[in-house]
Length: 157
Image 1 (cartoon, rainbow, N blue to C red):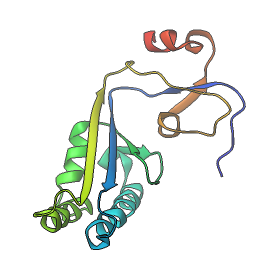
Image 2 (cartoon, helix red, strand yellow):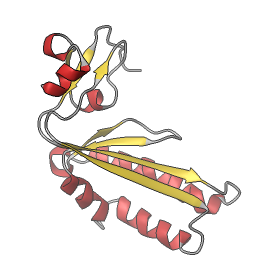
Image 3 (cartoon, helix red, strand yellow):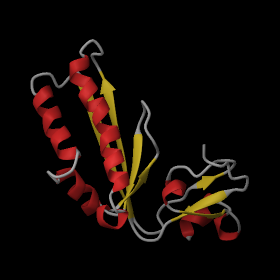
Image 4 (cartoon, rainbow, N blue to C red):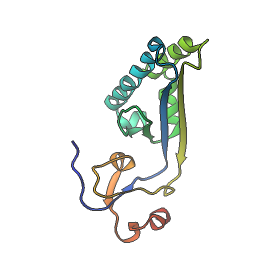
């Protein structure tokens, strides 16, 4: 278990970055042959990304697995798209298999994602009594004091 940091901390990351949210909704749980492959694919993709060099993939990290939304952090949309479209990586075969499996039954399992392009300094994040989490887990954590003590000040840089 990660160590809880007792002081208020703020996330600090240089440059633009991407926040990618992804999730799945099981609409027909009695059809496990439709949803189990998708459910099992995400851990494989994340494990693959964690073993690849970050400076090559642009993958900064994620918030962990669970039944809810998975939040991923990327250096750029180009990095995210390159991974998603690469036939040599785990995503592309899983994506094409999902589309074939769901071709005539899209309502059985829902998948979704949202992509946010964050410009330099156009974010703020604070953590109090938390282990490194979210953006703070994939970036630098700095004390939330001085010009980082309030949300508006963190957004102003």
